[in-house]
Amino acid sequence: MDENDKAPSSMVIGYWMSDRKSQKLNWIEFGKVCRQHGYELVKLDLERPLEDQGPFAVILHKLTEIIARNDEKAIQIIDRIEQYIKNHPKVLIIDPLDSVRTLLDRYKTYNVVLNTTLNNIDVFTPTFVEILSTNVKENIKKLKNAGVTFPFICKPFVAQGTTYCHQMSVIFNERGVADCKPPCVAQSFINHNAILYKLYVVGDHYQMVERPSLKNFYASNDDRDTITFDSHSVSKSDSSSELSVLDPSESVKGSSIDPIKLHSIVKTLGSYLNMSLYGVDVVVENDTNRHAIIDINAYPGYDGFPDFFGKLIDCVISRRAQSVCSKAYFEDSGFDTSDSSDEKKSRAKLNSINQYN
Ligand SMILES: Nc1ncnc2c1ncn2[C@@H]1O[C@H](COP(=O)(O)OP(=O)(O)OP(=O)(O)O)[C@@H](O)[C@H]1O
Ligand SMILES: O=P(O)(O)O[C@H]1[C@H](OP(=O)(O)O)[C@@H](OP(=O)(O)O)[C@@H](O)[C@@H](O)[C@@H]1OP(=O)(O)O
Ligand SMILES: [Mg+2]
Ligand SMILES: [Mg+2]
Image (tube, rainbow, N blue to C red):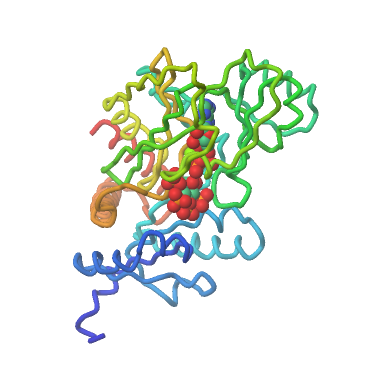
């Protein structure tokens, strides 16, 4: 490439995701989109110091599988990235590692939703409790105290990035409580006529896609054995699991998804999560029409998201503009933006400002 062809180094986007993910997204195309907007896209070599590869204006990543691995090598990789960010406070990271860590922990994620104002508009997270022990008696007591009802769904604590994190079970009775595999989160099952709504978010843009989901289960089925399943065999666009087929006696009433609620979910969660790239799984409860948030994913698949790359570069540009403005704003007000504790305070302040804009 001609040297004059190169974007200035301040316009380099360093990215990392697995080869599998970049192939699925046809990531080479994103390189072209970046060029059209004056950015250069460079894959990070996680084995080498980032200082030798930068400087970067932006770090864009799906590091969930590295963060979730948590072995010595993975810790070293993440430390390296965090150190770079600390040494270069102006670099924009999509998304901040602490925010991704929250989403990798289902228990923390559900607590975030619980503490938002979404409840006021009939958007909720089904009752949940963490199960950490294998003591069945103790767990039954814990479930009762928390108000988790049968049937409930048991999900591994780690939400993304491992081979087992999508292995789940539906538990119908006290006998089934022995099938909980701690550490996990037990969550009351919400009947929703086997329709899942996936909200894919890219910065200020979002798109809803409909997916198959689990059929209705009733408490009267209390002698049933536990059902185990892999979530990826139920709720992908091409899934056709038996677990999604409604019983013949059930009428297939369309649920009424409310676009205003979806809009509020995105507006509210964006600032609570401090994330730009995420997906929210929503089901609409039969009879009540309440909207339940059952899952939030960092950097999901975006299958069915029109013009993903166009929206992604848009997001990079607008987040950069925001972060430049906020740095200028806080420097003016005497904040030391290179100090990470001040940085945290300034982000919190900025979040609260954004929330009301
Ligand atoms: N509380 C619930 N009530 C009813 N059905 C649920 C509930 N939680 C999950 N499900 C069903 O189980 C599936 C998997 O659950 P969940 O989305 O939490 O798993 P996941 O592995 O994190 O999925 P993803 O691939 O989206 O990351 C959902 O798509 C939905 O069909
Ligand atoms: O491809 P990836 O590795 O990003 O897999 C992600 C997957 O996308 P895919 O649909 O392309 O498989 C997402 O599905 P949708 O919500 O978009 O349906 C969701 O399951 C994430 O939890 C997965 O993240 P992981 O568990 O792997 O970290
Ligand atoms: Mg899901
Ligand atoms: Mg998930």
